[in-house]
Image (cartoon, rainbow, N blue to C red; front, side):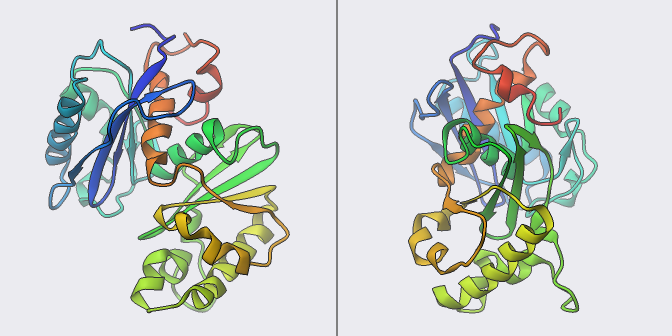
Length: 274
């Protein structure tokens, strides 16, 4: 396969759904309809692999020679191994996930954390493009995912949703994720108070140059972002629920012929641990 491919497949595996599409690597636009199937109950590796095969079959890209493939997954991912499991089976903990998918699909892939690939999507095609310094993307949903990007390079597996609230015994995502808003029946201003604590704390710890807020709730950014008082600019993500697909596709060539990269991918393939 040529490392100068102009399109790639991105697959975003989540706790409830598995989404995929073919992506134009020059623009980040979806070239096909987004295909979505339910994540199998229990989310065991074999069952998830079978569901990914269904997505690729519906996209008509099952042939390994068609287009490169990148996969996003809700876990700490280091050297292709998943070291945690969020809303999937505990079987994924300390699991050789990348090689498992490569063997099962019969092709090379690039496998990365879902929040990290969302960060890459915003770096390449969205709100973080051409931004110097430290960008911190957070995804607000069931939990709080994070991606840290410094001068265009991803610092993988940051897990900033798990900073703890002193003397409260809960981490940030238990207190301030979008799921906490729904669980505790908060209105926008009440939720914004919790977000204020969270972003102020992250701002103090890291002194970022830009916050980017992703996740599905980012489409309602006008209801809560203006309520926050921060020194750091904070903006909604451009790609929202498609960010995982787009970022995974953007990183797909990192799984192809290491060290052989063209101008469109050399700044992406080195942005995450492999």
